[in-house]
Length: 406
Image 1 (cartoon, helix red, strand yellow):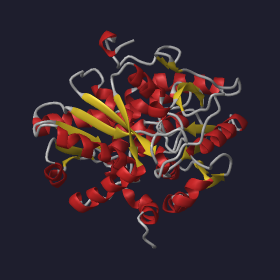
Image 2 (cartoon, rainbow, N blue to C red):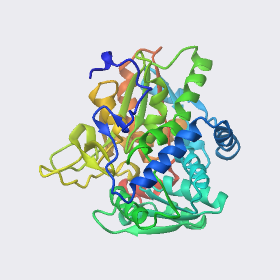
Image 3 (cartoon, helix red, strand yellow):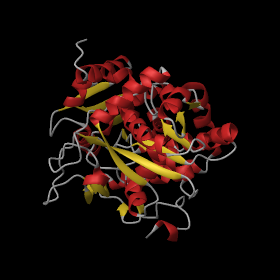
Image 4 (cartoon, rainbow, N blue to C red):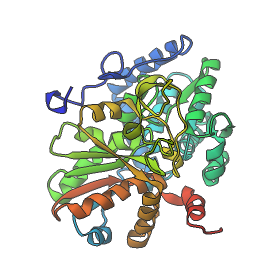
């Protein structure tokens, strides 16, 4: 269905958890009762004032929200076009947007009487956020992380262990986010009685994509208010990086029915979108299939086998994408592009030099797209990009890529 025939994007998913042909629940019989229980608990929480009061209190006093909307003046002047704003979610407690969602899920887990929390992580930020909130509430925490990501994200691995989490390196596949999610799902099937699976992105079986989106939508809600205060109108263009896509859906969702606001999602182009699959651009170079409990766009071969993607960014190194993003792509409400590792590194360096902000490699992809867009647009055009994570965790990866020995 084309975008101009859709009355509202804010009503999905449907009763089956689908966004058009995407999403749904493709899980084993063992997990279905847990999924249905979680859905029922979340539906109750959505209309429970005490739930949102607890969330608002923690967002304010624990996370540090609202995060600033920052006018990047030197970057704007350097690019010579549109005015560039950054939604600075890297200033949240734990250094990324992930904690926005983790708080909501773990409050639900406590309401459900679960005492053991499991999570998957790629860049480590979701793992750190989960370990952090588990430490706050005294819950057992187990984080599955691909062995390759354990190696390239050592600072976050150490942080998780300091916070009391058990970090389980996953050696299957290529040892990245997809493989970590596989093992977390296996754990959940085995330990259904006391375990809650805290998914970090807008993927997985229903209700996870919508639930994670709803918790992350605080990003876009704040952006609307802050942009109205700063400029007296809505932004013209939103830009955010996408692995599974939670930071992007958080920014995009409150604007989906504002047709005058252009939306651009930025996938990991790796070494270039090519037949060798040296990238993780599922919408640019993939096709629909089923993975991790939902139907969405995936990197796969002719037989439907999931391929191993590639990105310098551990948080974008996932061969799929959230089903709502697949729906926005097919209805053309949002545009999705791919940025290469080399382009992201250039954006990383420019942001450090001009704004005194060391970005994570994930939002560096979004910033690289801003660097392409801004010079082509008039000076009164307003761009907001989501600075969804800070770059402490990526210093060693960037140093290696730039040939610097630390």
